[in-house]
Amino acid sequence: MDSNIPNSSTKVSDKEDIIVLTETNFPFSLIVWNDEVNTFEWVIETLIDVCGHSEEQAEQCALFIHTKGKYAVKYGDYDTLKPMCDAITERGIGATIEEMAVGK
Image 1 (cartoon, one colour):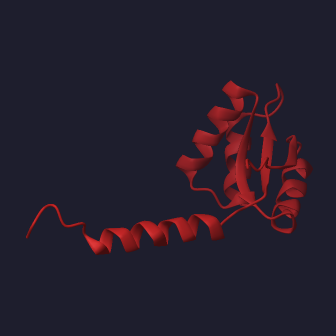
Image 2: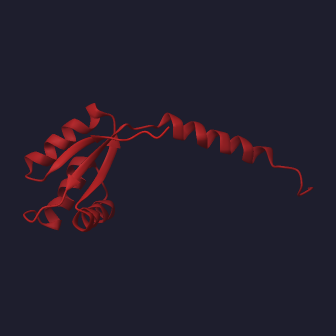
């Protein structure tokens, strides 16, 4: 096979990836805020129960929340994130929904 001929299957794959990224645009993020009250264990348990995170994913999010002060733990549309946000705040953990900035 001539190495100078582009692989057409790669080009199709690149185009498919671009389409997928465009179609999975989530305009909102669920932010969890750090505090001095809740334990890592409680935040991890909450992220697993409410957001459906794996234990490893929840642990990583909790570490980011602790070190950065806040972290976007989930992306999606407002109607999907709102019940999650409410469930997190009902457990005594600070959470908000923020609209993501769209660069043009």
